[in-house]
Image (cartoon, rainbow, N blue to C red):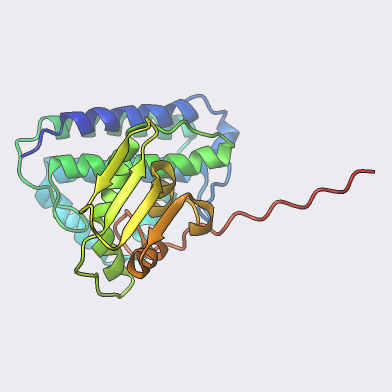
Length: 269
């Protein structure tokens, strides 16, 4: 069993980074719309708080989580939005405190977990996988918040966790789109924000994906359109994957549209 301590430390850091964006927001700014249709900043934080709460229940009360998951999955197209909507109705200070308390409780529960896999809405996960998934979601929804605020975040090496899920979820993305996953392995080579090269798959693979780690993470979390990222494919199957890639569980989302072209400049006299 892998030691979850490093990814738990990174999950804590990712939560603190997002907390730095919302912790001092004026109350009216919690109502700013984000790129997710119908979701404000409050919805984004409420969703993270709700999902942390479900992960905490999975770690501390597996039977209770299974019962709650069965009830939620009875409405697969609405239960995520319903959780976010309920939390977003709280006053911002109360919502912020709730999210912070949930993050802390989840960290403690995962750090002290005796081992074994945790139930989830999809396949059961190890503690390390659960922490990695929570980091991915925190980063992705944090991107929505940053976009709403017009903030450009400095990428960190924590993105490697997001990229890893994106690579590992390749076959899931195919299945989610009703397609049969290819049998062959892909090679993925990404430039990390620290200048390092992050790699997955055999060096001699015919299907290859290369580019900037940040852009790959934006693509697989569907926070950027394929046309707007520095990610390249070699091979028809690799190109096909990049059009459907997703690092998150559940049905395919609508994703982001391409950025509008810049307006032509007026000629000067």
